[in-house]
Structure formats: C-alpha cells, structure tokens
Amino acid sequence: MSAFTTAIVPAAGLGTRFLPTTKAVPKELLPVVDTPGIELVATEAAEAGATKLVIVTSPGKDAVAQYFRPQPELEQTLAERGKTDLVAKVRRAPELLQVETAIQDKALGLGHAVGCAEGNLTGADEAVAVLLPDDLVLPTGVLTRMAQVRERFGGTVLCAFDIPREQISAYGVFDVRETGDDDVKQVVGMVEKPKAEDAPSTFAAAGRYLLDRAIFDALKRITPGAGGELQLTDAIALLINEGHPVHVVVHRGGRHDLGNPGGFLKAAVDFALEHPDYGPELAQWLRGRLSGS
Ligand code: UTP
Image 1 (cartoon, protein in one colour):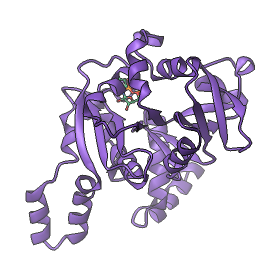
Image 2: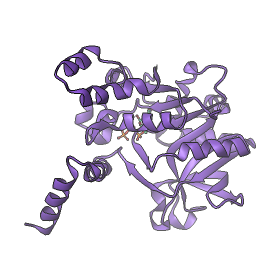
Image 3: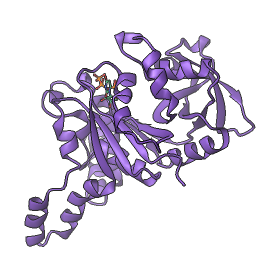
C-alpha cells in the first residue's frame, strides 16, 4: 500500500526568470530535449505510486493541463502515417495518471499554491506528495524512500541534499538530529538562506515533500513571510514547533534546477548527451566549441 496516492505539482508561478518566453509559454512546458519538465516529474510521481496528479495552475496557464489531455486527432494522423513511435510519445503523458487541476488566482506563494489543492483531496488522502516541476532529483526514486520513512516515523518527510558549506547560503537549511540511519534525520528546525557560519547543518531542502494532511490546517494558520508570500516552509516549521514528526531523507544523487535559464541549459545538455539521436553529435560539437575550433 502506497503512503500516498495523490501528488500535487504547483505550476502557477509567474516564471519571471524566464521572461520574456513565459509571457506566452509556461516554464513547466519548456522541453528538456523533447519532453517538458512537468512530464518528467509526473512520471516520477507515478513511479512512486501516485494515481492522481493535481496541477495547481493559474488562469493564463491552461496549456499545462492541456498537455495532459489526450489528442485523438493528432494520434490518428500520426497512426495513418505509420509513426507509431510518435503515437506512443503523444499518449505517454495522458496515460501516466489521472490529472486534475486546482486554480491559484494570484501567485501568493508556494504554501498558498499547495493549499489551493486541498479541495481535490478525498478522505483517503492522509498524506500527499508535492513535487516542484522545476526541480529534477536524479536518479528518481527518492519519494519511495520518503514513503518508507513515513511508515516508520509517521508525520511529514522531506528531501535534502548534502551541500558544500560554502554554497549553503543559497538554500533552505535543516536543523537536524541523528536517527541511527545516515540518510534519515529528524528535523527540529529550518532556516532560510543562512550565512555559511550560521547554518545549522549542510542539509538543504529539495523540491520533494511528503506532507501529512495536517499541513493544510497549518497553511491556514501562517501569515505571509519572505517576499510577502505564504511559504510552505513556514507551515512545516509550525508543525515542527507543535511536535509533529518531521524527517528528511538525504538524497545522495544529482539534481537540476530548471527554474532559471542557466540551470535549465545544464539539464538540457545533460539529457541530450545521453540521448542516442543527439548525444554523439552534441558531444563532438561541444568539444570543438570549447577548444575554440
Ligand atoms: P518558483 O519560485 O521556482 O517559481 O516556485 P516562479 O515563482 O514561477 O519563478 P520565478 O521566481 O518568478 O522565476 C517553485 C514552483 O512553485 C510554483 C511555481 O510555478 C514553481 O513550479 N508556484 C510558486 C506556484 O504555483 N504559486 C506561487 O505562488 C509560487
């Protein structure tokens, strides 16, 4: 039995770091080689046992939900032309899991966006997964590990990366206690973007959350924090203060931040180098480009 069957993907942000493109194209649909980031995280959620995906979107970003709807006419045209591999690609996203949307009218913060999805839950949803579509956590599988930790300790489970201390001030950082398992820590507090010397640990938050349903009550009790937004981390901090168990799984793998052009390009190059059609030529071109020839 999976610890969660519903995954929430907040996709209602303004995407200002990708302007001017995001005037018309949601950043969640920008292709990593040929597949939008949001399909990559939806696949990850489905692999971890989710059967329902709630995409939190804003009134101008219908294309994100549209992407998960079947396109029978396109499928038929491709099938008539014998393009069965393309039919399979087109069907992939709609067949992954049941997709619903929740609307966030105004980008009031990640915490507010998650709260908007409460109406999509059923009585059976004791916990929900939240995946940020601009954060690729590689290799996939950390949500399964997080579900096992919830089975053991109950409560809420987050994902952390062990970051070099000199880079830690760019992140939300966990104050942790040991559990006897090197990769699982109890969280006793969180600090946003501390100075390296003040950071309580080198464990930084990543965009994967397995949240106990109690989070929705906590989200109603917080006030706007950094940037005037309702912060998810403030609601988690409230739960910690009230004695609710919160743990992190330390993910010893890679990560791509698709939320800014620099990180996005690294992900695209990384995935393209692995791609059988594009990898070899890209590698050759890059070698030449970097050696100046
Ligand atoms: P980000 O801060 O990375 O996205 O939020 P953003 O606000 O769209 O990007 P910039 O900073 O303006 O460039 C992480 C995720 O949370 C969603 C975003 O869509 C993104 O997927 N989000 C953020 C919401 O759904 N609503 C919000 O109010 C804020």
